[in-house]
Length: 263
Image (cartoon, rainbow, N blue to C red; front, side, top):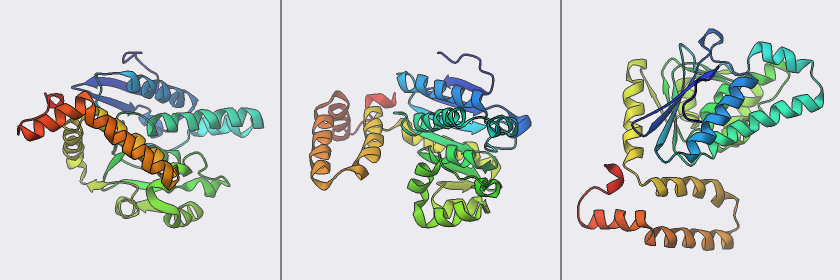
Protein backbone atom coordinates (compact mmCIF):
# COMPACT_ATOMS: atom_id res chain seq x y z
CA UNK A 1 0.00 0.00 0.00
CA UNK A 2 1.47 3.33 -1.03
CA UNK A 3 -0.73 6.22 0.14
CA UNK A 4 -3.81 4.77 -1.55
CA UNK A 5 -7.10 6.65 -1.38
CA UNK A 6 -9.10 5.49 1.61
CA UNK A 7 -12.67 6.01 2.71
CA UNK A 8 -12.24 7.28 6.27
CA UNK A 9 -8.65 8.48 6.60
CA UNK A 10 -6.06 10.39 4.61
CA UNK A 11 -2.56 8.94 4.49
CA UNK A 12 0.41 10.61 2.82
CA UNK A 13 4.17 10.76 3.19
CA UNK A 14 6.22 13.90 2.66
CA UNK A 15 9.72 14.86 3.78
CA UNK A 16 10.18 11.61 5.76
CA UNK A 17 6.98 12.19 7.77
CA UNK A 18 3.81 10.12 7.38
CA UNK A 19 0.63 12.06 8.09
CA UNK A 20 -2.48 10.09 8.98
CA UNK A 21 -5.65 12.17 9.25
CA UNK A 22 -8.98 10.88 10.54
CA UNK A 23 -11.29 12.17 7.82
CA UNK A 24 -14.91 11.94 8.96
CA UNK A 25 -15.43 15.52 10.16
CA UNK A 26 -19.20 15.30 9.68
CA UNK A 27 -19.29 12.87 12.66
CA UNK A 28 -16.34 14.42 14.53
CA UNK A 29 -14.02 11.70 13.18
CA UNK A 30 -15.82 8.96 15.10
CA UNK A 31 -14.44 5.57 14.13
CA UNK A 32 -16.30 2.61 12.68
CA UNK A 33 -15.12 -0.78 11.48
CA UNK A 34 -13.86 0.73 8.22
CA UNK A 35 -11.70 3.35 9.94
CA UNK A 36 -10.33 0.73 12.33
CA UNK A 37 -9.23 -1.45 9.41
CA UNK A 38 -7.85 1.46 7.42
CA UNK A 39 -5.79 2.71 10.37
CA UNK A 40 -4.38 -0.78 10.87
CA UNK A 41 -3.43 -1.02 7.19
CA UNK A 42 -1.86 2.44 7.18
CA UNK A 43 0.29 1.78 10.26
CA UNK A 44 1.29 -1.67 9.02
CA UNK A 45 2.50 0.02 5.83
CA UNK A 46 4.29 2.78 7.75
CA UNK A 47 6.16 0.22 9.83
CA UNK A 48 7.67 -1.29 6.65
CA UNK A 49 8.64 1.97 4.91
CA UNK A 50 12.27 3.01 5.00
CA UNK A 51 11.34 6.51 3.79
CA UNK A 52 9.26 7.24 6.91
CA UNK A 53 11.05 8.51 10.02
CA UNK A 54 8.08 9.85 12.03
CA UNK A 55 4.27 9.88 12.03
CA UNK A 56 1.66 12.53 12.80
CA UNK A 57 -1.88 11.39 13.68
CA UNK A 58 -4.57 14.07 13.65
CA UNK A 59 -8.21 14.77 12.86
CA UNK A 60 -9.89 16.76 10.09
CA UNK A 61 -12.11 19.65 11.15
CA UNK A 62 -12.92 20.72 14.69
CA UNK A 63 -12.48 17.40 16.51
CA UNK A 64 -9.69 14.88 16.95
CA UNK A 65 -11.90 11.81 17.46
CA UNK A 66 -15.30 11.48 19.13
CA UNK A 67 -14.83 7.78 19.82
CA UNK A 68 -17.09 5.09 18.40
CA UNK A 69 -19.51 5.99 15.61
CA UNK A 70 -23.14 5.86 16.77
CA UNK A 71 -24.37 3.93 13.73
CA UNK A 72 -21.62 1.36 14.25
CA UNK A 73 -22.58 1.09 17.93
CA UNK A 74 -26.23 0.51 16.99
CA UNK A 75 -25.17 -2.42 14.82
CA UNK A 76 -22.89 -4.03 17.41
CA UNK A 77 -25.50 -3.49 20.15
CA UNK A 78 -27.64 -6.14 18.50
CA UNK A 79 -24.76 -8.40 17.45
CA UNK A 80 -23.84 -11.71 19.07
CA UNK A 81 -21.04 -12.18 21.59
CA UNK A 82 -18.85 -13.70 18.87
CA UNK A 83 -19.46 -10.76 16.55
CA UNK A 84 -18.78 -8.26 19.34
CA UNK A 85 -15.58 -10.11 20.24
CA UNK A 86 -14.39 -9.97 16.64
CA UNK A 87 -15.02 -6.21 16.45
CA UNK A 88 -13.27 -5.62 19.78
CA UNK A 89 -10.24 -7.66 18.70
CA UNK A 90 -9.94 -5.58 15.52
CA UNK A 91 -9.98 -2.42 17.64
CA UNK A 92 -7.32 -3.87 19.95
CA UNK A 93 -5.18 -4.85 16.96
CA UNK A 94 -5.42 -1.32 15.54
CA UNK A 95 -4.42 0.30 18.83
CA UNK A 96 -1.47 -2.05 19.18
CA UNK A 97 -0.37 -1.41 15.59
CA UNK A 98 -0.01 2.29 16.44
CA UNK A 99 1.49 1.72 19.89
CA UNK A 100 4.07 -0.78 18.65
CA UNK A 101 4.99 1.10 15.47
CA UNK A 102 8.78 1.21 15.04
CA UNK A 103 8.38 4.84 13.95
CA UNK A 104 7.86 7.58 16.56
CA UNK A 105 4.29 8.86 16.58
CA UNK A 106 2.99 12.33 17.43
CA UNK A 107 -0.70 12.93 18.09
CA UNK A 108 -1.75 16.38 16.87
CA UNK A 109 -4.86 16.75 19.03
CA UNK A 110 -6.72 19.49 17.20
CA UNK A 111 -9.92 19.16 19.21
CA UNK A 112 -12.07 16.94 21.39
CA UNK A 113 -11.03 13.32 22.03
CA UNK A 114 -13.72 11.16 23.62
CA UNK A 115 -13.78 7.48 24.58
CA UNK A 116 -11.76 5.54 22.04
CA UNK A 117 -10.43 8.86 20.76
CA UNK A 118 -8.49 9.23 23.98
CA UNK A 119 -7.09 5.79 23.28
CA UNK A 120 -5.68 7.06 20.00
CA UNK A 121 -3.98 9.84 21.96
CA UNK A 122 -2.60 7.38 24.51
CA UNK A 123 -1.06 4.97 21.98
CA UNK A 124 1.04 7.74 20.42
CA UNK A 125 4.50 8.42 21.80
CA UNK A 126 3.99 12.18 22.07
CA UNK A 127 0.75 14.17 22.13
CA UNK A 128 0.31 17.90 21.56
CA UNK A 129 -3.17 19.28 22.25
CA UNK A 130 -4.76 22.62 21.50
CA UNK A 131 -5.91 24.41 24.63
CA UNK A 132 -9.60 24.05 23.73
CA UNK A 133 -9.46 20.25 23.46
CA UNK A 134 -11.60 18.20 25.82
CA UNK A 135 -11.06 14.58 26.87
CA UNK A 136 -13.32 12.00 28.45
CA UNK A 137 -13.49 8.30 29.22
CA UNK A 138 -17.24 8.40 28.88
CA UNK A 139 -17.93 4.68 28.44
CA UNK A 140 -19.34 4.23 31.96
CA UNK A 141 -22.14 6.67 31.12
CA UNK A 142 -23.43 4.03 28.69
CA UNK A 143 -22.86 1.09 31.00
CA UNK A 144 -19.60 0.16 29.25
CA UNK A 145 -15.91 0.41 30.11
CA UNK A 146 -12.78 1.74 28.30
CA UNK A 147 -11.53 -1.82 27.95
CA UNK A 148 -9.40 -1.92 24.77
CA UNK A 149 -7.76 1.44 25.42
CA UNK A 150 -7.13 0.85 29.13
CA UNK A 151 -3.63 -0.72 28.90
CA UNK A 152 -2.29 2.34 27.13
CA UNK A 153 -4.06 4.96 29.24
CA UNK A 154 -2.96 3.29 32.48
CA UNK A 155 0.63 3.30 31.16
CA UNK A 156 0.38 7.01 30.39
CA UNK A 157 -1.58 8.28 33.39
CA UNK A 158 -1.12 5.66 36.11
CA UNK A 159 -3.72 3.67 38.01
CA UNK A 160 -4.57 6.43 40.46
CA UNK A 161 -5.67 8.94 37.82
CA UNK A 162 -7.42 6.24 35.79
CA UNK A 163 -9.49 5.21 38.81
CA UNK A 164 -10.85 8.75 38.86
CA UNK A 165 -11.20 9.27 35.12
CA UNK A 166 -12.61 5.83 34.22
CA UNK A 167 -15.12 5.66 37.07
CA UNK A 168 -16.50 9.20 36.78
CA UNK A 169 -16.40 9.57 32.98
CA UNK A 170 -15.98 13.30 33.58
CA UNK A 171 -14.90 15.79 30.93
CA UNK A 172 -11.26 16.82 31.25
CA UNK A 173 -9.72 20.06 30.07
CA UNK A 174 -6.50 19.99 28.09
CA UNK A 175 -4.65 21.26 31.15
CA UNK A 176 -5.93 18.37 33.28
CA UNK A 177 -4.92 15.93 30.54
CA UNK A 178 -1.47 17.50 30.61
CA UNK A 179 -1.20 17.22 34.39
CA UNK A 180 -2.27 13.56 34.16
CA UNK A 181 0.37 12.76 31.54
CA UNK A 182 -2.09 11.94 28.77
CA UNK A 183 -0.62 14.73 26.62
CA UNK A 184 2.86 16.25 26.57
CA UNK A 185 2.07 19.85 25.65
CA UNK A 186 -0.93 22.17 25.48
CA UNK A 187 -0.79 25.15 23.13
CA UNK A 188 -3.04 27.68 21.46
CA UNK A 189 -4.60 26.41 18.24
CA UNK A 190 -2.47 28.71 16.10
CA UNK A 191 0.68 27.25 17.71
CA UNK A 192 -0.27 23.61 17.21
CA UNK A 193 1.55 23.04 13.92
CA UNK A 194 4.68 24.86 15.08
CA UNK A 195 5.00 22.80 18.25
CA UNK A 196 4.29 19.54 16.42
CA UNK A 197 6.94 20.62 13.91
CA UNK A 198 9.42 21.22 16.73
CA UNK A 199 8.90 17.68 18.01
CA UNK A 200 9.30 16.29 14.48
CA UNK A 201 12.54 18.21 14.02
CA UNK A 202 13.89 16.64 17.21
CA UNK A 203 12.81 13.16 16.14
CA UNK A 204 14.38 13.51 12.68
CA UNK A 205 17.78 14.36 14.18
CA UNK A 206 17.74 11.19 16.30
CA UNK A 207 19.17 7.95 14.95
CA UNK A 208 16.31 6.01 13.33
CA UNK A 209 17.53 2.62 14.57
CA UNK A 210 18.12 4.06 18.03
CA UNK A 211 14.57 5.45 18.13
CA UNK A 212 13.13 2.08 17.13
CA UNK A 213 15.19 0.33 19.80
CA UNK A 214 14.14 2.92 22.41
CA UNK A 215 10.51 2.09 21.69
CA UNK A 216 11.22 -1.62 22.04
CA UNK A 217 13.08 -0.94 25.29
CA UNK A 218 10.11 0.94 26.71
CA UNK A 219 7.70 -1.85 25.75
CA UNK A 220 9.73 -4.77 27.03
CA UNK A 221 11.84 -3.72 30.02
CA UNK A 222 8.92 -3.05 32.44
CA UNK A 223 7.74 -6.65 31.93
CA UNK A 224 11.14 -8.26 32.67
CA UNK A 225 12.66 -9.66 35.82
CA UNK A 226 15.75 -7.85 37.01
CA UNK A 227 18.06 -10.65 35.88
CA UNK A 228 16.51 -10.72 32.39
CA UNK A 229 16.57 -6.92 32.22
CA UNK A 230 20.30 -6.78 32.99
CA UNK A 231 21.13 -9.20 30.18
CA UNK A 232 18.75 -7.66 27.65
CA UNK A 233 19.84 -4.05 28.17
CA UNK A 234 23.53 -4.94 28.08
CA UNK A 235 23.07 -6.87 24.83
CA UNK A 236 21.07 -4.05 23.23
CA UNK A 237 23.65 -1.35 23.91
CA UNK A 238 26.52 -3.63 22.86
CA UNK A 239 24.84 -4.34 19.51
CA UNK A 240 24.07 -0.68 18.90
CA UNK A 241 27.63 0.44 19.70
CA UNK A 242 29.04 -1.76 16.91
CA UNK A 243 26.18 -1.11 14.45
CA UNK A 244 26.65 1.15 11.44
CA UNK A 245 24.36 3.77 12.98
CA UNK A 246 26.07 3.65 16.36
CA UNK A 247 29.51 3.92 14.80
CA UNK A 248 28.42 6.86 12.64
CA UNK A 249 26.77 8.62 15.57
CA UNK A 250 29.81 8.34 17.81
CA UNK A 251 32.20 9.36 15.03
CA UNK A 252 30.04 12.39 14.23
CA UNK A 253 30.02 13.36 17.91
CA UNK A 254 33.81 13.14 18.22
CA UNK A 255 34.35 14.94 14.90
CA UNK A 256 31.85 17.68 15.90
CA UNK A 257 29.66 17.23 12.84
CA UNK A 258 26.09 16.15 12.18
CA UNK A 259 25.49 12.44 11.59
CA UNK A 260 24.56 11.34 8.07
CA UNK A 261 20.96 10.45 8.96
CA UNK A 262 20.16 14.16 9.46
CA UNK A 263 20.95 14.99 5.82
